Amino acid sequence: MSDTQISVSTPLAEIASAMPHAIPLLESNRLDYCCHGEVSLGQACMDKGMDPERLLQSIIDQKPLLPDTGRFDPASMTMTELADHIEATHHAITRETLGRLQELLPRLIEAHGLTHPELQELSACVEAFADDLEDHMIREEKVLFPWLRRLERKSEIQGGPPWSVRRPIDCMIHDHDSAGEMLERMRTLTGDYGVPADGCGTYRVCMSLLDSLERDTHIHIHKENNILFPRGIEAERQRGEARLMAT
Image (tube, rainbow, N blue to C red):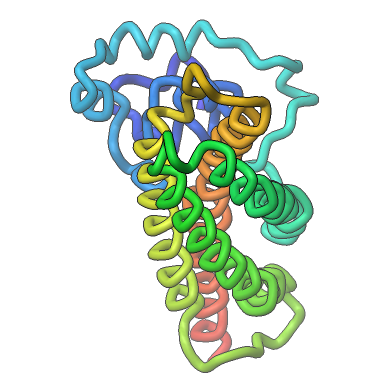
């Protein structure tokens, strides 16, 4: 999809997939291109009281940081390459960032808990988010991603559970929706990850970590929901058709 092919009726997921360099602009305008990427640019803008034509022009004017031939493009990767990339980057970033937050938040509560009681709920949200995401990532790494890699190897007999790959994918998408809701709660609790006037250096670090975690999780979910998972469903469909034709 070229810049001239997008319009206000283009779904956010298609824009993010075809134009990865536009993702920061979608993020800065709080447009959900990952969990609800089926919503059109026009509808998403109207829901937020924004001018869709103005944002469309801003997206068209946004240029890639690198030439098209050299920039990172998840949509051009194989399922195996994309699964490997997600594990090596997003899963690693998630674990590292949550580990730092779990280390820093108790110190933050000790220093600022009396004047900022919302930090207690924030810490509980981070702990629940970390537990849920770790379980989610393990299920991807041990079950779903190996399944997708097998589907891509045409010569390999498909093994695994006797049901469609759509079943674990649906479970992952449900987890993604829950993760998005938890991130939204954390943003609300912190006033858009703001640092209060009495905030210390640890406060600033924690808010910065939460902001970067949210942005990376959105991109992480986008690559799975809108690129990797549909590829897996299509690969399974094609394999099923090939089996029928062979009988």
